[in-house]
Length: 585
Image (cartoon, rainbow, N blue to C red; front, side, top):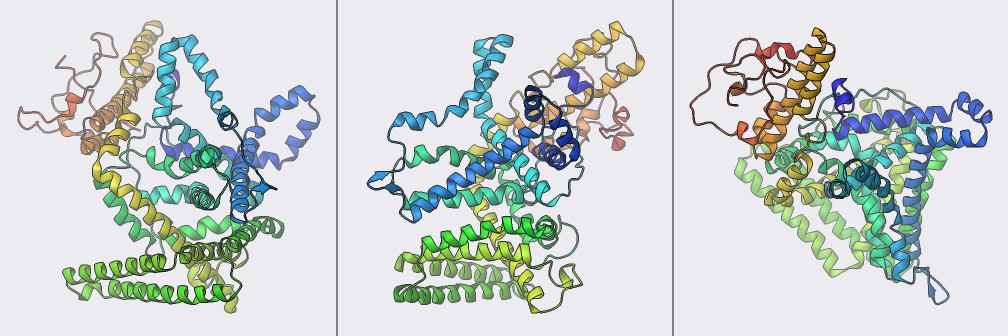
């Protein structure tokens, strides 16, 4: 790892950077699958070399796509069997009969044995067991399952629609917090939508199944679902910190609101939606027919959840329509109040909003308590609307000129894209509110924030990428070569890694503001005071590790002003920063 760090590689530890890296590799392999050169090479290899070529290249991405497809097929197949009451053949249930079969389903976890064996040979059995346990405790399974879907999504998207592009990735240690709206833009289409879909299917299957052994049959599916939904936010620094969660909620509401239009994808949900659905709109007719099978699945599932035929169903439909109209009227009042909010006193505006929110919640709870079948009907209607949204996105076109397309004419070309876009926005609103309903209580108790920070950053740079080890190798390299340019490069590297160590130590010490200062590339002024020459690289004095005490407020009075020139410091030009003193050694 030291050698990789010295040449600026192997340091993309941010979730978004790794996501973009996996995406561009998956798209490149999809283009290879469509290339004639791969076919020609495959026809000229013998079978053993062909297997090596397959599993060392495109086969890895094909296997990822088949894995995710298997998860979806298994989930929806078991759900349809439960909904239609077809979980038995005669009087025998189609489920495992004993605990042994359920345990054998988890043999995939044995793939960690080669890692355990390798670490045991290199570092000892006890250290190897500790490292593997730390990988599991810090969310390692979520990470690896998450990126299986990353590869599968972009591989299949490029096979169907093309459009492989280069995606620039960073080369620095990532310790900054990414806002929720940015995370949502990155991962919604590839992971979050699928995770919500699988979670809804598994919950419905649990409500309808009569076969038993639900936990044993679905634990692996829930693991994949949890990885798709939670991995981006678990590996986001300070993702459960109350100030950051509150700020993310306000930013996300501004981004997704109906009144925000124009600009870029980071400014408006409408622009982001247009960019995300562009690959679906440019599919060929054959590919659109394949993707439309998902709409057929939604219709079949909606029919199994609620029977729309008969007089009883008609009565339920009428009662549900009354409740839906009341809820719609209340939401219209909320919209009108927001439009005239600038004319109302702040206290009155908040009071009216609270009253309308409580009334809307009372309508929903009253309808479900009075008629429990209404909940099943609402879920069934949601699947029908999802089918309409899929078909509208595929076949409805881009929409009117206000949405960026000037060639559309007729009612259909205007109405269908507008309806599809509004359905998609409502779906995103529902997902976002569910996320914040989950995040806000966890952020309020603060325990999750502390545990997350400790697991992600405890001893984060101590496994081969620490300042002491780098400087030790720097002295050895200088003794062997003595090149001046190499000494300067190693000195720059030491400063960058040390800055990240200080940022992580500040996080562990409970000082996120100071961590942000270090992560931004501008060290605090106290760090720039009383600077002197750096003897570490020259070997005249041993370096010391950064500790959390370096970031606690000092009682020695205000620090002197920083030297001139520090405002121009960046990671790309670190020579403007004087070296860090070691006066307190």
